[in-house]
Image (cartoon, rainbow, N blue to C red; front, side, top):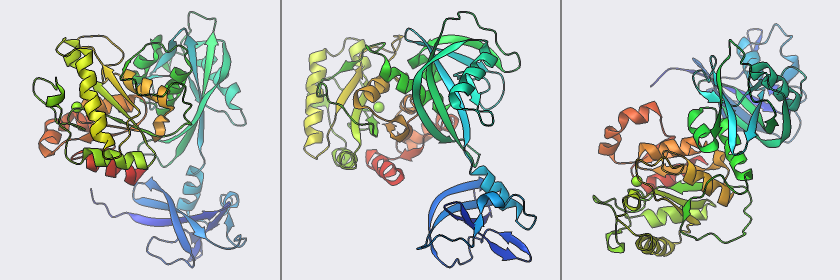
Length: 421
Ligand SMILES: [Mg+2]
């Protein structure tokens, strides 16, 4: 996709914007024009034919002589793109409610807008001058006619949306209600239903809903479901919130095998995998392995044999300096309706909870479309691992739900993660 786009430089510091005069009009310098100071790029805004590159200047003083961003709008000698870009830098603000009943959360299906046909938490944009806690109560009343009591903020999240130069900040609250029947706003909401968190996560495409539901899941004590762990986690260790990499096992760390890896002798680390994972460990990522083990579901491997396989894996990885915090296993087969079998996000939810992983900073790496789907469900970034043949085989699914990166193997996946975090 090569397009000749005009590039513009939007230099701003402390509310002051640098513009150049061109035939009586003040505009951004073009990407090709020299500016009389050094700049550091801080972001890109896509306006179709115009690409606006945001940059911070390296200056030793406050540039009083530049334009104050708020004064630009009333001037007739300022280029329209400048006004548009300054306007678009202002964050959009939304507030949403995770209304909880037991371990379920109330979700609404949208009839219009970005989320049309998808499930969401009830909520919406803040009105002018309205605080988020007031906005969320008003929005819930308007959308579903419910009276809610807020039980605290789950988080404040920040995200761009595809094809838009703007960023949105989302305040997601935990709430409860005594109402059991809901009056749906006719032109906006198609349905309202209760879902367990792991189901809600796969029904939405809203990153705030995903991150909010992961943070809600952390609060449930005890958790809504248990998963199978190897048992590496240090009991009672309090992790600060931070980034994690969730790794699929077969085809990523070790060679996959027809008829399953059933004994330690079958287990063969892929070349370069331990070193690549060690690089992620050194960069500060908490490593968790998340693996569907159908072979256990079909009773082809006893649990003690799986443990021996995993001990061999841990040893092989540790020899290169790779540290695995925990191994999470789905021991069910393909027909089971468990919360943990990928593409369902149960293993990643358990890992995010154990390791206090921030999903917005975390990654999922796998060689199946179901790995990508599980990563997306918790709002993590994703890497699909596979050679050209494998990518071609899954091309249609990967187009429908693209990962953030494609990689030949876990070495390339680690490079993509380290290059983009
Ligand atoms: Mg795999």
